[in-house]
Length: 487
Picture (cartoon, helix red, strand yellow):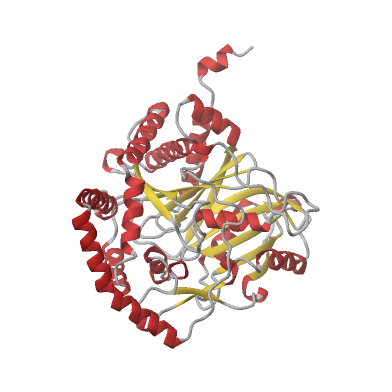
């Protein structure tokens, strides 16, 4: 079994992490101009565009007795009835009705014996609009793979053939932290055939037999390159410190999760964001994190919480995908762990602090360290790693209490079934006692920040969404001196 066909250690824990209160589905919601197509017409279009993609045809196959990590295998011919669905919103079909329907779709579990994705046509939006909800399990995709899956569905013009795709993201490089853009055809290649039980047992036996060989090889490398060994050990220590040190004080932002969710979003102009980031000598991602810091500050103050007793730390995924490496299913990411200064009252000061802290994390090598930690986890025997992951989950991670994912969508307007995509809205799940998770996506000159929250713990999360939007608007406003100097 090739390495590309086996789930990584990170991917392998996402399925067993699911509970009745914690579904791990990521998604994109496309809002389109009307009229909506006939559901069968849309189904035919989707099948034509996705049937050859491994992400649409691969399923998870467990190893005998779970003694090894699961593998990706070919699920056979795509069965549209298992993946493509249609629903009509209740009147009046506004944002609240769309939000409730997206939450319902994302909460429902999927059968792990088939490819872990669904596409829903949602009719009945106000103003004659309709929507598409693309849902995939986190085991199968990370944010960048999910964004590429959306691109596969879109065309560059309303009358384009099914062979064309919408333009790749090409906004300024500071929109995302990843160094390299995901190509429009990144998820390529044929899924692996389903192996026999004998082949699986032989593969497992081979892995066990070669385990001492790998140990000896590692020992020889330690002796031959002590400097490199010390560097890697220091890198792993740094990665472990980022993940395993539970130092956040208790707050309403973390704790046990209920099964109920809320989801909302705000929008801003991407050109204004790029201009504001250049004026402040920071990145658009820094603006995003600063908007979260100010938004959470407003939200917590409105609740009457003492900010001196609250720590806010965001995990910020950083994609490691490269055009120079073969693409694969699953997640290829490292992370930053950024302290968001909710205790600082001034907007500009918060932005400067966020920019300094993200720069410091990069200079310290935190993304490399967390990536090294994930690579090292791939060498831990699957039963031992699963046991450790379960213990970690039960103990409560206590390290981060907000997720901040930044994605890059198509830079130009896309079309689906001949209809223009008006907006692209991201959805990320809450998990691991993190009661609110956020994502920002760019699409055709627009930035959208979406917030998913535990509806029982944070029933007023709509105020959080509004606060983040208000703070983002403050950050994008031109300085007073610039306004005064205009003719």
